[in-house]
Amino acid sequence: MYLYGVNNSNLELIQRAYPDLKLIARGSTIRALGDPEKLKALQGLIDSLLTEIRLRGPVDSQRVSEILRRRREGLPPASHSTAKEDGVIVYGHNGTKVIAKSPGQQRMVELSEQNDVLFAIGPAGSGKTYTAVALAVRALKIKAVKKIVLVRPAVEAGERLGFLPGDMKEKIDPYLRPLYDALEDMIHPEKLKHYLERNIIEIVPLAFMRGRTLNNAFIICDEAQNATEIQLKMMLTRLGLQSKIIITGDMTQIDLPKSIRSGLIQCTRILKDIEGIGFIHLNESDVVRHPIIKHILRAYEKAEGEAEQRSRDRKAAENDTSIQAPASDWPPTKSA
Image 1 (cartoon, rainbow, N blue to C red):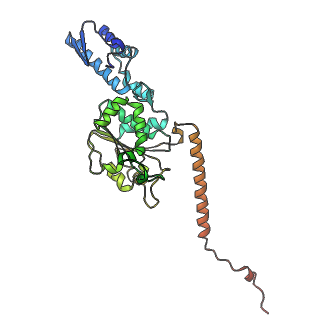
Image 2 (cartoon, helix red, strand yellow):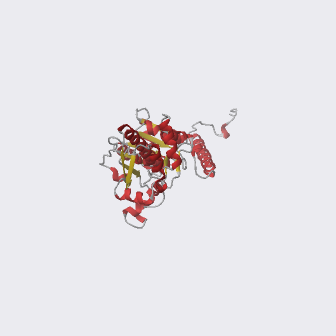
Image 3 (cartoon, rainbow, N blue to C red):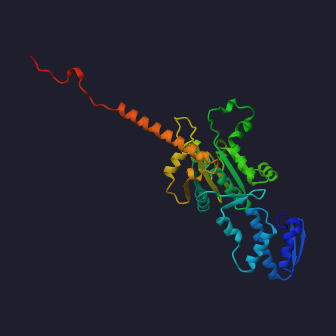
């Protein structure tokens, strides 16, 4: 048990902090005997440690000693403030920190805490999906929600679903792979397998969401730029009691047919003034992948801007309706 520490080192520290109490640990249960007031203080400590473990992963003896010191001195729990100060959202299964690495990502965390619906829009590599998954995993670990639902539209970007090998799940899984990758960084493989088998974590195509109501859930709709207006309206109205939803998307990577409008564009226009709905626009300064990606994005933006300017110039030339007299008629000649 994470609470006990390596070779029960954490448990020994707790016992030394409360020498008048008798602690008996059996499996995942701790019994304590002694003065009721001291038992109440011990219960508060245990609750703080369990919250710390759910939020940030295993605690070592040094961390337990720090928490005990802060309690003796009447200071607030460091676990609540430190997560914000160092940018840690959640701890991965191997103790690695999952951190908000840019001002945009930090703002995304803040807006998620303030709103039940959040739109996170930004370019590839800006961390919008990874940060959203981290927030969902944190909510599950601290039991703020009972399940996570991760949703993506299965829109072809060149290939066709019908031509891919396998059954429907095997055809769809490649579209959902980025969500699996993020989860595998944050949850131990065996526990993740358990969550997936019990539907505590669901990863589903957007088309399968119709008719559902999701209570006590943290929902992420990823790649929402490839959802139609009807689909995104349907997705937003799945939100049930005690639930949150983050909608992520990249306006520069719309793979829908040209005749179909992206629902994400509509949402940014008609929902922006509703209380309880937040918007965060990430940019190239939030890109946390390989540094060259920023230069790639700038090059594409420059090329697209130049192409748009050429298109405008061409249309302006086509719409020029000025009439000039034939050169042979100008200047006029005197009649005989």
